[in-house]
Image (cartoon, rainbow, N blue to C red):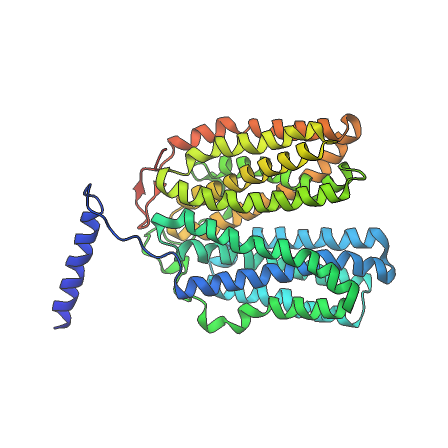
Length: 424
């Protein structure tokens, strides 16, 4: 009887696979959300809530404790340094440990050190805590990205990653201002306790997190996960990372320097940042569903063009309407490029290399986000803010040739064999 059941199951599976290739036969689409993936989304939401609560509060906490603006900036810089260090290290760690283990370890490194700040904000302690938390956040982010990609149905991966973008955007919109408000009204201890509690949610949810979706347990037949350098040598991975960097440079510029560039129009700058964040979320969601149906490579050039147009519109920085319209365009284009590059980087890796793709994408995000404000500040000192924004937009067009070349690459099918990449 068991053999009969298995035979019937195999036949029904073959029938579904064959019917999916026969025109005119409708095949039910697989669900995006499964129980394990829901817990990954919960963990991602909690980790980002903790991160944004601390991101807005730690600099103020340091300044109020006597560390001054230099100490506040040092804490933020060290946090980013720890994040990048984790993303570089994550690929090697994924060769030895399951993604679930790394996710929980990252959560512990985020949550527990926050409690050490309850005793005071001495600068050495603050810097050490920020470094450890940054490492934990980077480790958890890469692990969550790998788990999400592995748990999504390959035919709906873009749509699922777009949904993940929606989930991940909410903490940035809510927790970032909430941390400042809570710290001002109820004290820093309340924020630190909330950040620790939310960061530790994945630890509490360990038993429900997926334990089998691991690069080493897939049937890809490709052996151990490729290293970071090997990933960059993979077809198109470096080019995709560079395409993404051109947009993250602009994103870092917008978030860090738009309020300064807008001068006295603080409310307009805040509105522009909110519009940019919401438009990026919509752009990611749209790109996911559209890319699954028509191909993700075809979204790169339009996404870059829309984002670049938004930055070039900042030439009219003094006009509130132009600023908000520019931020809407940039946010939408940025969201499209975010999702398209992530999906394409995953597709250009075998199943065992999904963690590597996640690490490369996150590394490109943070590298551009951190470098953008530094370079922009130097340029703006000579050209002024409007011209510097326009030059940042023009930078994106330099990535267009790399976008066109993506259509020539072939991708890995879910089983690890080469399959043609869809082209719109």
